[in-house]
Image (cartoon, rainbow, N blue to C red; front, side, top):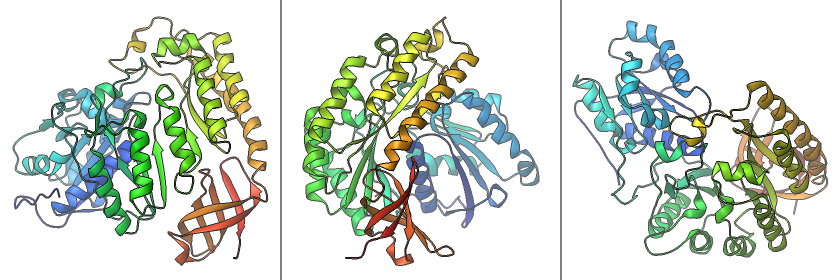
Length: 447
């Protein structure tokens, strides 16, 4: 178990962390809190209470460095009033910019990359000891990916990292440059982690990686084998996973999903990014429109009750109106229950950022609005199909003022129903009486 105690770090100091980006970053923040708690730091709810502020940054969205600079600027007065306040940046922007961040933002005291999270207590110790500004942003490519899932209060559901990094090098994506090459944890380590979390009351785990389908343990086990082993050899009640890559989503995996529907929800998030084969080739996605449809049909044949969502990039460099319409019609054909769509924005180091045929911003925005409009037309009728159905809902929270319990169904729908506080962490049958595309309402069904 990781542990770090340092006499140079004073007791009962407060740490405030802001988090941007994906579930990997959310998981990284939880790890930071756990490590700093071992080093005698306590989480605080506002930056005014903190003696240490960390920005866990994301470089996926537009102008990420600007957002970091803007947030640090808001802490200028705090720093003036409390010279002992230390401010640092972690995450993907830190990995990408390294020393340049310290040069561009003098208010910062330290910068640490995605592979340096476990060094955080020592980094803080060095900063506290006035050893100058610290940068730690080297990738540890040669070391095995061995960590323990550190969660202070895991609750009903928690994330478990199974891989880190990515080897796909999509032309729009900065992840291989900010999280390094792909590495997998051993299956035995993961099973130990999940068993430990189950003993602490966790009912659901989400297996997390930039591309979970590429998982490969040192013992030779792939992702289908991992899922099957978690389903059979642990007492966890539900197993989710994110994110998948269509090129690696194979029949072996779907067979496992079909075999273990008691534990693995039939919800499948399969990012398509574009519905046009030429655009997909420029994105370096590794599949065509036709091959993606083949995957969808294969899944539906084996798992007929599968529910789909996807990611889409609108206005990729060179995308014509005709090519955009291929994405538009893909929504109509697949009938995703939900989509996560964004306009393309260039990222440093990526090939697509150098493409000269960038689509004008107003065209990208107009296409995105059209995409959301057609998705709304698709999602509303799909939501209505849940009316009067009984869904199995794992309760994650309860509002004592309203008496409403909230959880998620196996279709990844948020469901609200009248319940009690002791429902948290338990699964109940709920009959749906009101529907929206992302939220359902219902009544508890008594046995």
